[in-house]
Amino acid sequence: MHRTSWPLTVLLGLATLTVLVPLYVTLSMAFKTSGQSADGNAFSLPAPFNPASFAEAWTLTRFPVSFGISLAVAAIAVVLTLFLSSLAAYAIARNWSHRFFRWSMIYLLAALFLPFPVVALPQIQLTALTGLDNPFGVGILHAMFQLSFSVLLYTAYLRSIPIELEESARIDGASTWQIFWRIILPLLGPMNATVGIFAFLASWNDFMMPSLIMSDPTLQTLPVVQNIFQSQFGTNYNVAFASYLMAMAPSIIAYLFAQRWVISGVTQGAVKS
Image 1 (cartoon, rainbow, N blue to C red):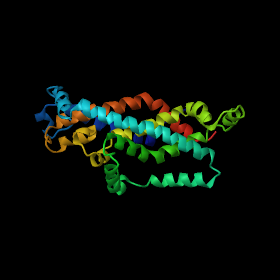
Image 2 (image 1 turned 120 degrees about the horizontal axis):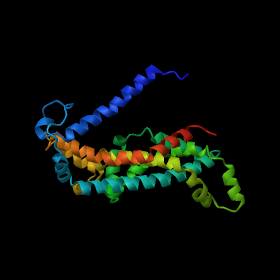
Image 3 (image 1 turned 90 degrees about the horizontal axis):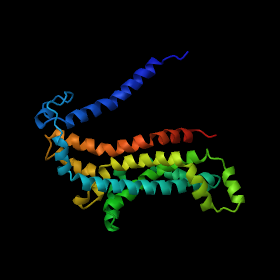
């Protein structure tokens, strides 16, 4: 007979509330009028129902332009992260007996403990000197900061793939690149989805790096543009929350589309068959 674990159920319920309550406040505030959103009661229902906040947020944030720049930055970060991390992890996982590759893994793991503010100043100077103080440069930096965690995930997952598959292909005359491209990469599907969704969310939600790196304010990403609601339009909470809701849509859609592969990728990488 299946027994319910009430402490775990209560814990999961509290964890669910930490997600649902902010989401409810965001939805209700986005559909309120300016006067109702400033009355101090964030949990009251919109009365009257006011969808005009979305049109105002669309105009103030130049939403199509900012959205396109954020999407381009995230796409660059995801593509570079998938390509570089899978190649590096494959080399490390299959050459673990060599000291160079073991130390390479330790070097990458050490980078996990390096926060962005510590290296912010030299990165600002280097991107300015090399002409990368633009969305393309931010996309590259996002990929570099995802490299350590992604290689860790890929390496754990690659160790669950039998080496006999590669040995059979090598006997048939396949090169290392052909083995990776035709055999290993298709088997990395769940982990590609896991790493891709992490890289996308980290890039899409990032505020600090693009605000410090990019010199042209007309090329700023959506989270940075939304900063106008913290000062000049500080009392228009309904417009601000409408903008936040529109910005949340791509990340929610991406996660809903890839969640099945994300879960399977994490669990398969956690154990070795």
